[in-house]
Length: 116
Ligand code: 5GP
Ligand code: ZN
Image 1 (cartoon, rainbow, N blue to C red):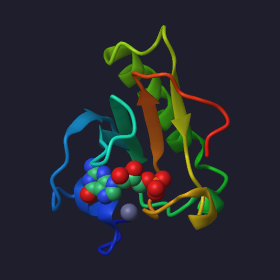
Image 2: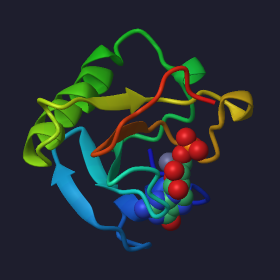
Image 3: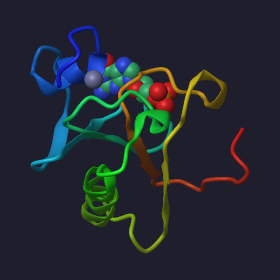
Image 4: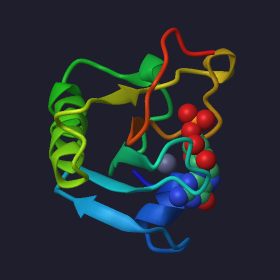
């Protein structure tokens, strides 16, 4: 399903340009327009899923593919040994601003914990 009013669906359809660095049958990844670390990549499912709350049984392969993409991209970006963070915000209270599921992959600098 493609949601016409969804920013990330429009990136998927090629409507809005993005620096896409990874593509598979289930997911794509592109660089965040407002990077919070030297590497800041967004990994999204091709299928429109708004939030974690909208996941259903059967979505396990899609979610798994986001993490396998993260592992591969982290290695390609030279982050695997030093470390990196993957995070998915759910709803506005946690900082979600685009309502198409996405995994943030952040690395290339020291990442403090807990996050703000
Ligand atoms: P959220 O706040 O929903 O967890 O993350 C959304 C992310 O999408 C933000 O980090 C924001 O910088 C990024 N973003 C918003 N609009 C665009 C865009 O048009 N292109 C790209 N590449 N990233 C975007
Ligand atoms: Zn979407």
